[in-house]
Structure formats: C-alpha cells, structure tokens
Image 1: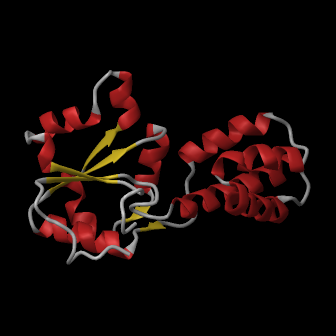
Image 2: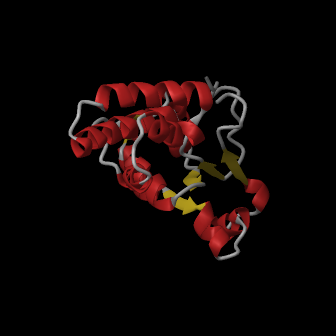
Length: 189
C-alpha cells in the first residue's frame, strides 16, 4: 500500500500505467476467463465453463498469464481457433463487473487532482485492450476529473518512433524532470 504522506508531490505531471497500478490486472483477466469459458461451453455444446474457468485461474496463479490460453486449449483438447476468439474477447470484452481502483491509488489521484497536478495514463500493451480496461474502471469520485485525464499508448508512440517521455514533454510543455511515471514496478505498489 502506498503512503501518500511519503509521496513526493514536487513534479508537475504524473502519469500512471493501468495494469497492477490503477487496479489488479488479475481482476480483468478473471472476468475475461469467465466470459471465454462460457463462450467455449456454448460453442462446444457441453458443460465446460466451470471447469475451464477454474483451470484458467489455477494456471494463472501457478504458471502466469502467458501460458494460460495454450495450456487451456491443450488440457481441454480445444481447437486452435479459440486462440483468435480469446484474443478478440480479451481486447474487447464487455465485463460483467466494474474494475475497482486500488484504494491507495484512488487517494493519490484525488490528492494530485486537488493539488492541480496534471495527470495522465501512459500504458503499454494493445491500445484497444488498454482503452477497454479504462472504460470498465469504476472511477467513483474521480469521474469529475476524467475530462482532464490524457491517455497515451506506448505502442502507438513506438510505431511512430517517438520516445514516450519526449512526447509527454511536448504534450504537457514541461521538462522531462517534471514528469513522474508510476508503474507496477515502483515500490509501494
């Protein structure tokens, strides 16, 4: 848990990653697994959903996200066609439940907005998927600040051969040392 009293508010711009910073990425993945397992059950015409979602959750916890789909396809002897279906669902899922901001992040974001700091999202990963995640976050009392929140996608900047920090410098009209990037690797998260 992050301690806002120990957090330095000396920068002008604060940009946040989405996954495992704003909310636990696991919350998104488990909902995608639930939707996928129900899709497979419907498509296959046999009662597999409960078993598939349990297997996917266990695989995520033991082996990590990168192996879940392939192990699931192999374990349940599913067609490789499900790979494409899963990736499409993962990027565009309409989640049954909202994603809940971590309490410490919600408090930090409120403090930053109240102090008049510029706040943005700088995220890596599939831009469609990352935008979808933002759409499903329950912003609660932060909703009033959303119009001022800018979103930047590292992959889109890289595609245009633009360094993210250089882009943020121009976008916010500040020097690089006035920007604080908060990722899941930062202590306190």
